[in-house]
Length: 245
Image (cartoon, rainbow, N blue to C red; front, side):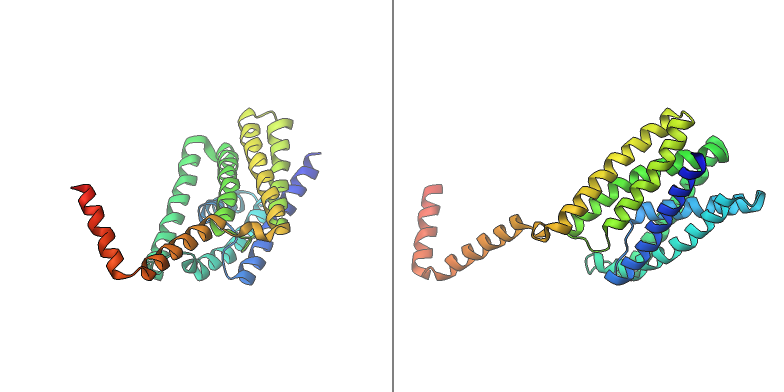
């Protein structure tokens, strides 16, 4: 059972990363929210370097492959990310902000290691940042008002990639903390899968009808004001001032 769950998790996350690379270049955007991406890259590179230096295990090689795949996703973030923001955000500002986020995420990993040790920290941070990622995927879908940079394959693979270790560490090994975090991830992941599936089958649902209605009302008000003769406007303004007096 343990090897099976480990294989499922490894394959599922590998699919997430390579699908994110494919979709990112296809849609000219980044497919993983930046905070989650930075935490993942910091986790994978940190533990890959440590494990390869101490004992060459299968998980160390997998972490290295994931870190290399994350580099491609990081490239899509810095390449296409500025287009997601207002024009006043220059590439220099964007790059500086991105570097700051990555630096903070590395610091978070090292603080957990200093407090809990390599073994426990690897699990605690993995599930905490996974819960963050699950919520951020939902937020990214809503913010973009579309499926740009997102697919059902990523959503399902991410769910399976987290569910397998939740069963392994939370149920089989009996860790209530990991089981709780894994359950939170599972709920958010299922919500995200449902939203992606719904938007995929209801593309009209991506239209912000409330914003369009507001713009139409504003346009009608401007048109009504322009069509009113100046004399009537002055008269109306005079009546308004009299009423206020």
